[in-house]
Amino acid sequence: MNEGTSTSASLITDTPAFEWGEGHPVRFALADLHTKGQFAAQTIVLIDSGFTQAIFGQQVEKQDERHIHHMQTLHVNNEKLTDDEDLMILQTYELAKADLLKIFVEPSEAFREARSTAQACIVYFPKIVQTNIGIDALTWCITAYTMVINPTSPIKLVQRPMMPNGPRGFGITARRFIQEGEYIYELPGMIAKTSRPDIQSKLSIIIPHHRQNQGSEERVLFGPLRFVNHICESPNITWEAIDNSCAFTVVALKDIEAGEELYANYGSNYFDNLEGGCPCWSCNLQSYEAIKEEENERQRQRNKTQEVDREVIADKKKERNKRRREKQRMRS
Image 1 (cartoon, helix red, strand yellow):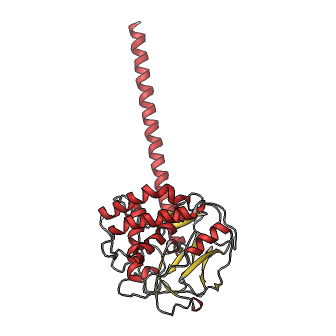
Image 2 (cartoon, rainbow, N blue to C red):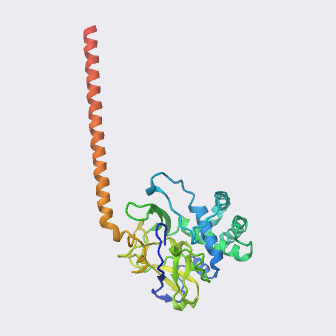
Image 3 (cartoon, rainbow, N blue to C red):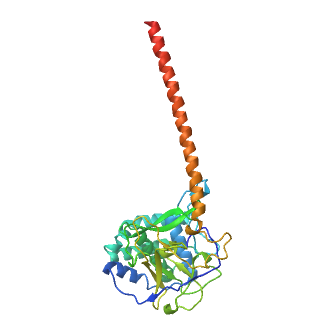
C-alpha cells in the first residue's frame, strides 16, 4: 500500500493459504528464510520505515507537486529519522552493497554481510534498543529489499505517478516476463506479530488469514510487498498467506510483460472512507485520458509556436543574407 491515500479500511486476506513448497532451489531458500522471523509492531514499524526512507527516499523535491517522490512510512504519525541518520544508514549500506548483491549467488555471505551492516546501522535508530531483536529485524529488511534492487531479480522498485496526473510515489514493476502462476519469491511481505493501532499506519494494514494462526486483529504489513499498488480492475498478482507464519508470498494471476507494473486488488471496500473514492488508475482512467488530451493539445500548441518561431528566424536569416549579397554587389 503506497503513499498518497488515507483510509480506515483493512485489507482482509481472503486469498488462499498454502503449505510452503519448493520451487527454484536458491530463490525458494531465500524466500523461506524471509518467512521465519516474528517482529513486534513497535520494532518493525520504525525499522522498516527508517531503512526504506534512508535507502529509497533520498529524493530531491521539486516545486511541481506531480514530481515529488513520496515515501510512505509505517508509522501512524509518519515519524521519520533525521536527515543525518538517513545519510549515515545510506552510506553504510552503500559500502556493503557489492557483497549484499551477491545474495542470489552466495546467500550465506550476503546474509553475514547484512547482519554486519545491521549491527553498524542500528545505532542510527534512536528509539530502538540495540538488542538482537532490533538487529534481526534490520537484517531482514536489508536482505528483503536487496532482493528487490538486485539487477537479476524479476521485479524492481520504481517511481511512478500514484494516480492520473497525481504526485509520484513508488511501485513494483517486472524486470522480465513473468508467467501466469509463477511465484515471485523476491517480493516478501510479513505482518507484525503484535497489533499496535496507536502506532501503525492505516496505509499498510492487513487482517491475517485464519490458517496463519495469527489471530484476527489488524496487523501492519511490512517488507517489499507493501509497495505493490492497488487496482480495482484486472489485477495481475495476488498474495497468498503461508500456513502457520506471519508471511505472505506473491503469485502472478496472468502473464506480466517486462516493464509492466504489478497490481493487486486490496478489496472492494478498502477506500470507502477516502474522500473522492478510490484513487486507482482503473477508476480514474477517463479523467486521466481527458487530462492527457489537454496535455497533448498544449504540446501541439507549443510545437506550432516553435514552428512559427523557426519560420520567423529562417525568414530573418534569408533577409540578412539577401542584404549581404546586395551590399557585396554594390561594392563590386
